[in-house]
Image (tube, rainbow, N blue to C red; front, top):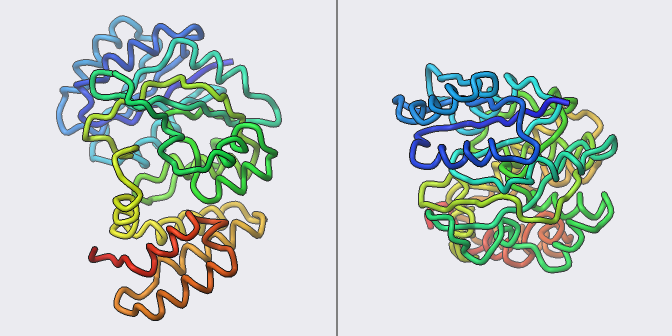
Length: 316
């Protein structure tokens, strides 16, 4: 069994040495580390080169001739990986020594994907008192079902928003053809992989914190940085509803016979994404109608999402 760790890096010279060091002290070390570099210069590679010299049969480095962006870069790295089990890895985190061992042990024929949790830290790796799952806005009951619920209960909760970050995921190479290529949508690789695995297999959950998730102001995800109000404003400014509509549209296109609730999720998101900015009455009617039908509770944050659609517009 060969283990691949894939990294999509860009201007990572400040922290990547710590991350690579944590990979080489794993109780089950990776057989290869595939690194695809989007950096405009060679500063990140200079850090990687030290490990390349020491572990020439493990490090596989690729410099992108043009910048691909996060999701496309991960897509390229995954396509180049030769392992039986694939781990996603960010350039600025640190892994606990038993992470690979514990995640690999949780995989089986029924569960071809697995994820753990991570603790948010400051730039110096001091814990901030919350985990990545804490930042996803799930209730205590939902969090319990994510870990201990049935496959259907997990799926119903995950359809609101996927509970795991890419940096905590691993999956078998058998699913690569279902995942690749990752769609050309901004920063979608976490959710895309999450839903693709969920459609074609099951996720195992290791209910442990096995990653130090460093926050330093330049993170792509921005986990834990926003209040509910701030998160709502950001969601509207990015038109996250349209993004979800497009993501689920691509899932349905590739999956063929997906369960009906995936289509309902896609249709609801697409309609939210097209709500008229200047027509308050139409937005309010849509929100009240879908509150009554339960769509905001099935696929969003309930009343909070409805209020967002009524009162916030893209110009907020």
